[in-house]
Figure 1 (tube, rainbow, N blue to C red):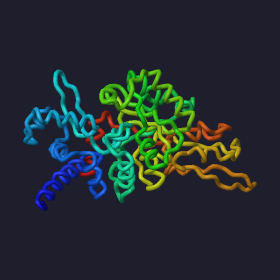
Figure 2 (figure 1 turned 90 degrees about the vertical axis):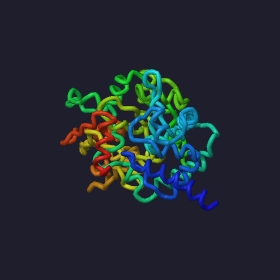
Figure 3 (figure 1 turned 90 degrees about the horizontal axis):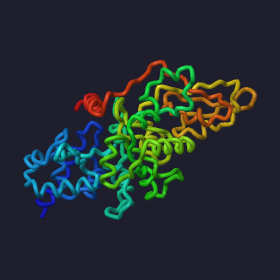
Figure 4 (figure 1 turned 135 degrees about the horizontal axis):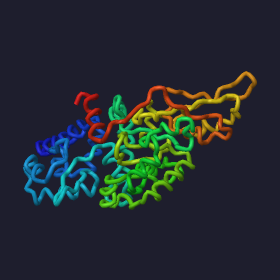
Length: 368
């Protein structure tokens, strides 16, 4: 019996090792192993451990796993329905890719509302895992981050508006995508099972362009036109949520609309001082003579990058921590006097050209 148990554990550990080697990473600890045992059956763990780092046809996975194609197809379809594998249509067949931890099977698990798994138990396990030492630091990336921050377009200064490129504008990213899908925010859904969710809306997670086709096919989101997505963008801006986007120049696959209390990425900043999102090319600049000292900007900042400091006359003035600020523009949009404006950073950042380039950079920076 002991031999059987050890053999089973070896299969799950091989899967964990495979996931840990993705560009984003997934540090191995007891909490990860608990998660994998609950999400993967033993046969699924075996198949998952055999995946290469590029999409593969059924025949190749069959050769690597030693499982006959008809049986393997059933396993892969089941894994895809659970969000553990992405099945990508190519001509008259499918290619398969193992879903990473983040952005990947964490989101796909909590985009669901069914009772096929114990979501409360998984929420507790993921919460513990992401707060384990070094986990978020590993996933966040080194110089190349998983996500990037999009500024609120209504606070972009007129003086530089013509210089702002399309990849910096959320509305243009959406228009170029041609539409997509709207899903449940995985982070807020997870938080609801922990009893810690805020009152921000849940159906505000956007998948864009071709990436949305899989989301819709798997029932993880509903189709959305460009206008539908722009309405969500407007709604979330009115609520002071932060726009986080896939950190690529061309064809981003998603835009999240995030709060500092539920979002894994913003909580990583608040609670662990770990940044998994690249800042926008803007930062707040205070016109102190016009400032009312109301403190609304500090209250609205989702990552506590603004604090109020006493002035000589007894009033207060906001102070921005530029080491923390990600340039989202929430503070500027909320300022009633217009004294907190957004200015261009001196060094402008251009994201990786596409997803492949992003993952290549992340892997090289981590020595993979």
